Amino acid sequence: MSRPSVAFPWQRALRSITARRHLALALITCGALAALPTSAAYAQDATAPCTDTVAAAEEAYLNRNYQEAVTLASQCTDRSAFEDEIVIQAYRLITLASLRQGALVQARSAVTNILHIDPEYTADPVNDPPAYDLFISLVRQEEDTEGTADAETETEETSPALLRRNEGGPFLKLIGVGLSDYTGDLPIGNAGHPFDFQEISTGSGAPYLFTAEIGYEFPSNLALVLGVQTGNYPIVGHSTGSNDISGSWRHTPQLLVRYTFGAAGESVAAYLDAGANVTFGGEGIAGPGFGPSVGGGIDIPLSSTWSFFVESRFNFTLPDNAIDGTSYPEDVQVERPPKGSITGPFDSVNQLLGIGLRIRFGGAAAQE
Image 1: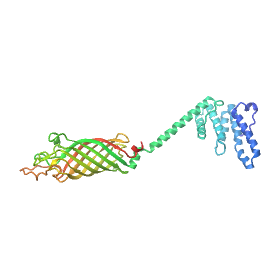
Image 2: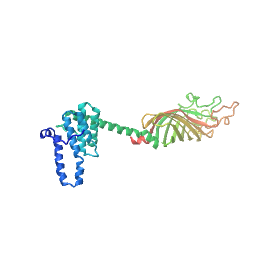
Image 3: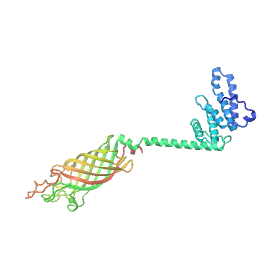
């Protein structure tokens, strides 16, 4: 709908500070055009029609022609063609007229556009109704809330646990405790195996052990682990052929390669490990033994840094007479030689069941 150039009576111009501002701007523009080259005057002319259109929209709003006010003001919202001040005035009229019509979505969109142009924009406390000022405040709060939510979403998408998983990092088993077991050569009538529980009723003290480890998780599912297991094995060397071993404590450093099924530290994950050990300790004819180690367990995350583990591990040793000082049946000449153990020429010091805490220092822990 086209309208002639607006020439308000002075009485109507005085009804609105905004209209007076537009009139002053038009007068200044006309004076400047006389002093500018033709090209500059043409550039200024581009905003003049919208100045008139916004004034017409203002008149329509004051006359309660709200839909006409929206239609006119919508012609002046192109920031590439008009000054930001004109565009803000247009969106202001769209907001006021939309609120009068109950078109809240349209009003909110107009205020959002104003805030994108001028984030510090506030209503005029003299010329704008209180409802308009309140509406701007509500939309600004919503915009701030949505911006905060978007920032939190971006932070979550970086996923500290995934960073640790991708970057790898060191970890430490602070302390673990477990149930110890010795499987090896025993006197006649006893066949040793890991779950015979002879340690409960025979030997020196209770079967328990402590473990610790330090390791490094690589970007893949592999980790390199240096661990140690030290414990009391009540029947190691008990009733050997010459009864010349004392001391039931054995110490077992281990070098292991671990493979984790899943993302350790993110969700419950199972792992298997294998490597080598050296076991020493005891007095008398006991000596150090060397051999393979195998084990596995479950890692249960408590936080992005801490996790709880449950595991078992078996450390086999050679030669057969190293840690217990004997190799049945060669060392004992009897009519009915003992069966020895199910591990054959190997003896082993085992962690039947162990629990403890791990702490991880890579990725997520480093960024928190």
